[in-house]
Image 1 (tube, each protein chain N blue to C red):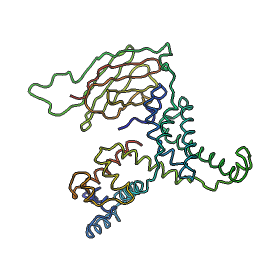
Image 2: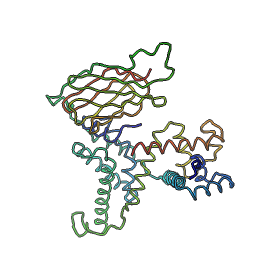
Image 3: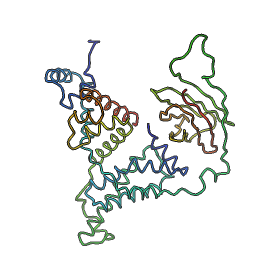
Length: 201
Length: 185
């Protein structure tokens, strides 16, 4: 068994599909691909991706038609939740922040580090994990307490992202840049708010 | 990474108009293209388009699987396309759109499953490209979404880069598209 198989790089596969490889390199790539199911599958995938783009003739709907469709949505004047007398609005309180722990003496973290936060909100606990993802941050977590469905929303003046809770009341929000956000958890019987969540440095 | 369809539907249920606008913007091209690819006129396609989103507004609270909003929209658009198409043919053949026999005329312009699948795939790829940084979006648009891609020299000028970097950048951008598509599954 050859433990040192060298596959065709993705860049080479793209050049091959685009017919931009010199003849010698093309022949070598074809020879490998003919004997390598993984590389052959990757070639098929790139060919399909390029074909889908090159043959894309989807038509934009006329702008007026799009605006009319947007205008179809007329939510009721009063938000749904506020018509439910049982819905409580709760401001969550920070109970634990791993970022507040003192670093080891003489050590200074040069890179952003993941952080865990735990908020309490009158029968609900919100476990947050903030993880650096390139230049942005991913926020994942879980609602602990009575929870079977809901949605979480993270917002700042220029950006709002949302995620639904899964069956275990876990969620994963799309990555966001560093900043201060408002986090709102919408549950059937409560709306829980973290008014100033600092993400990143 | 954009908000998921499921999150947008849930937000619409809370009366979030911005979420509704995002849904319309995300799917307008696909929903309009389905009747157009089936051979309907612009006016007939507009009817289908309007009816699909009207139905969505009516059914927002009861869609059982918000995560499968795309499939729901495609099925609804396909059904509306058939309905409008049959109406048009019944009228053209001298019948009325309430005449059962006229409405049962065979479908001479079917919308094959393969065509629908391809339209959906193109929609997903286009959405994935739109999530990339501007440089990748511009490069991929110039390379793959033009009838006649410009030469690399012209693309390099448009991007303010060297011709030699186009190839490696193209590969990096396509890799990003793949990752976007994988994360959306």
